[in-house]
Image (tube, rainbow, N blue to C red; front, side, top):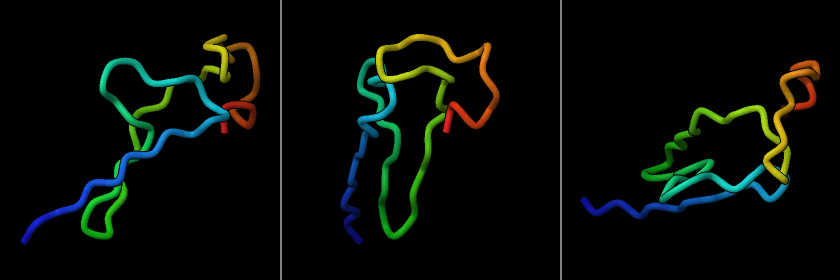
Length: 54
């Protein structure tokens, strides 16, 4: 069985480093990376409530 990988990055979040993606989907399963609390420009959101990092 061959698997087709679909890699997605979310524009509202900062770009992941290296060859990482925010989400990878394969064989009807999605794998979500450990996202850091950063805005699109890479500014930390550590002083904000958790709702701001979603």
